[in-house]
Image 1 (tube, rainbow, N blue to C red):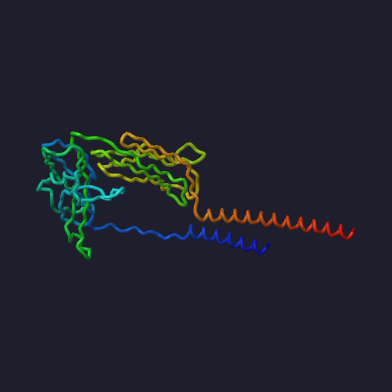
Image 2 (image 1 turned 135 degrees about the horizontal axis):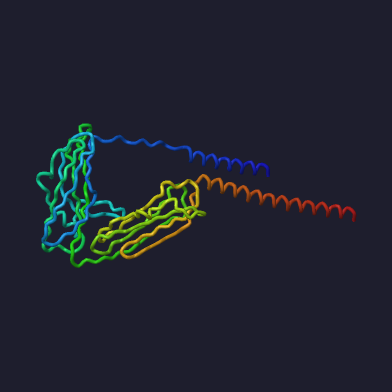
Amino acid sequence: MARKIKVILFAFVAAIAFGGYAIFNTTPVHAEGQAAIHLQVSPTKQKISLTPGSKYTGTFKVHNAGAAPFSYTVSATPYSVTSDNYDPDYNNATTYSQMANWITFDKKTEKGTLQPGEIVDVEYRVDVPEDVPAGGQYAALMAQTEAGNDENATIGVVHRVGMILYAAVPGETHISGEIIKNTVNSFYFDPPITVSGLVKNTGNVEQTATITTNIWPLFQKETVFSNADKPVTIDVIPETSRFNSISWDGAPSLGIFYVEQTIEFAGETSSVKKLVLICPLWLLFVIFALLFFTIFWLVSRSRDRKREMREARGGVKEKSDKKD
């Protein structure tokens, strides 16, 4: 019996040691330095309205935010996506990306050289065809540096960034969609607490999903995380599905919380509220080790008592036989 207890105690200490190693054995992360070539475009997206047969003129900014001068050019490309994570596709044209063919740029600003800190306003024009289909149209207005700008690079490097242009064309448009998933997990080994959602646009114009997340401790009413004042909004272009996740990076390593996520999209509302537990893996090892040790001890103790009772009854019987 004593040997069994020693073995269990050894396993219990090993579990605690493993948990401590998991906590304190971390690898430092080093930040990378700023590149000499740093191209920026602003804003990152624009929403406009187009009328068949009309012309639209707009501007966006190209900014040299780096430490070295560079030459740039601008161009228009189709814009679509290839997955629920909204990986951009600037090459394959779709029904909803014809607008790239209608865009031209002012010759004075479509290319040039920018010194560090310099910003240029690039003017673009959209010549809308008479027979343009109703619904959404999407393009990317791209700015890129010319190869060879970065003197420190060992190969020719091209930096490329862009602004997404969302356009709506009046006519036979319809708005429809669905909330496919609204996910709040009940258990986490480690922070952060992350919630997610998936929405699908089945209409022919882009739609915006609004996502609100609130988190508060089990025995409190005040939230420790909330974006109610500024909900997350995501644009979803026609005939695509879009995944989104929201994380509470300030979550502790151990705790019990209520987590609620509400998604509004295409006239629908989905709300999910769950009790969520955060418990480190090492602590689970410790808890299971304690439970195992306690159960084993109780079972062993019960067996010892039963054996002692049998031995006691046997001793009484033996004395009775001797008297007879």
